[in-house]
Length: 278
Image (spheres, rainbow, N blue to C red):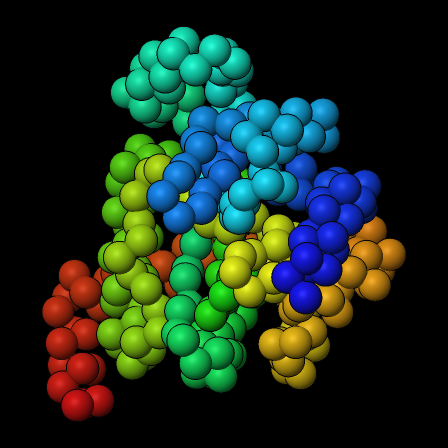
């Protein structure tokens, strides 16, 4: 059966509809190929030909790689040499200078639990608080869900902040939000400027589930097997222009949400709320 899954995986990544959706989410970001014991960073995938070229270059289909993208945007990220030694030098330089190339940094809230039913319950509770925020939801491909808000949907006050401060603000929010609402499935340890997340529409090892963006209906009637490549390989035609399925909302609603929970921390009120919960 594993061989059949690999056939489906190749067919999935070779399909123009899927490649278009993947490229749209990876454009201007750092692409990463990751498997146990091996990571290839600093990959640029701004066009289908770049993605195909790097699939071949790093033997993507011969290895159990997962496909990731950075939360940060790097429109002018350099192309790196095919020579291994030269590339190492160029990557070392980029790792020191990456802040110079960074222009945006998206928000991510990670909901993670080995029991997918628990993660799903948490997601539904979180979505109530995010009403009015322009966010999207993606199955993580393993044991949880990701909530994204793109930088372009941030309020001007957030865009005026240095990236380090923005990242730290989101980390504080995730911790406060988790503790105040008693939602332990939220992982608030993940925040840093080089953070990566599984790419929407990518196939996730070792489960062969797809990191699929979800509608409200998908979430209401969520079934793990519906995320399997075995199921989705026959539904590719329905995914044309599907994108990230962003909800309607305003930057002001996002600003209000973040500010509310960080203000509670600043005032020490969440300690009192926690005592009431306990």
